[in-house]
Length: 276
Image (cartoon, rainbow, N blue to C red; front, top):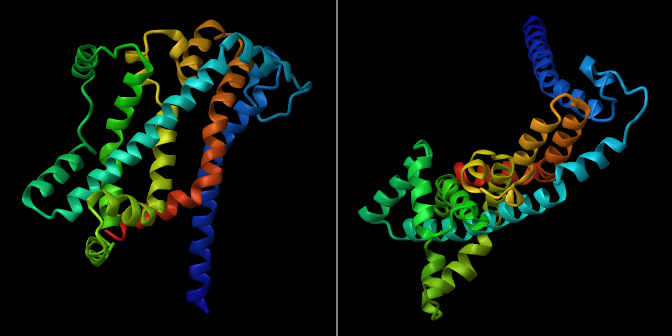
């Protein structure tokens, strides 16, 4: 009986600590959302109090003056295409490396694994992009994001593909399939959970990033929403209600995506990590 009470007491303490930790994350988010509906003077208290008057016009002003519609389209285009390219290239690379269990394949896999910890060199990347003639274009950002997230994606795909029996490949070969048929018709349908995880993780990573657009998107018409927030804050730094509205609109798409797809993230991470 005493041991059960001790366990209950410890579990209650852990629960309280987790609630307090959650509040430290939720409270600033609520301050931002509520502040986006306040007046420029009322928002300066930075409190959790509801607005005395709900200023929905703040959002209309932000969308119009912040150019968010164009930035939203740029973000969707860059994040979406980067996710698709990353899935196609990294899943194919992982398939080849896992099925060809040679020293060269293991060395290439180690090279990808090192990409998880090795930082990107901005100056070198800029020179490469300039040499390709893509500097300042959306295509440069898409290619860079695809490459930046390739190490993590290969790690997940490789871990999952190790659990897929090679007997499936042998049966397909006997039926007259080539290596491309095996990848597209046999392997790819089996890695749907990891595909969902990679797509969501890459999309969220690209959407929230501000470094690449600053260095590689020289034209402001190609800027994404996080970078437009940076620019908007420089113009309206005294109007925190407008800044909060801008931040809310920028965070809303990726927040909705995470809430709707979090079960796929957990299942895909489990499939790619544990099964490997």
